Structure formats: structure tokens, C-alpha cells
Length: 67
Image 1 (cartoon, rainbow, N blue to C red):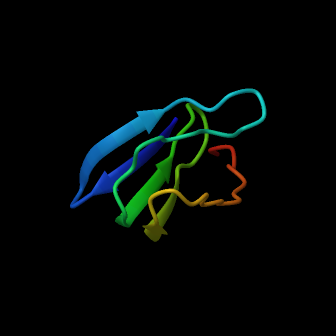
Image 2: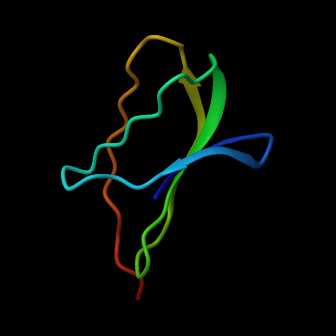
């Protein structure tokens, strides 16, 4: 699951496809915290991600197993 948060409130959440990609359409421009979650794995957070409406934003991450 990939969440977009603004002021600690989730404004969007989507589940990635098999390729690990997710699309949030119609996002307002601004700075968001992006949080990636998967059961059994440590979450990954991008604290200040700038989103510009109409442009693609790519983030690359690797989730690590807990324990």
C-alpha cells in the first residue's frame, strides 16, 4: 500500500500492481509525505515529496523484511 499524507492525514491510498507501480490521478500540487507499507516488512517513508500536478513523480525503494 502506498499512502500520500498531508499534515499527517492520508489524502490518498492505493495498492500497487504486480510491477510495484501505483498511479494517483488528479493530485493537487504540493509537498506530501509518501508512506509505503506491506505486512511483514518495515515501512518506508519519503517525508517531503514534491508533487506537481500533471507531471510524473518517481520514487525508488526497497522494502526490508522485519526481523
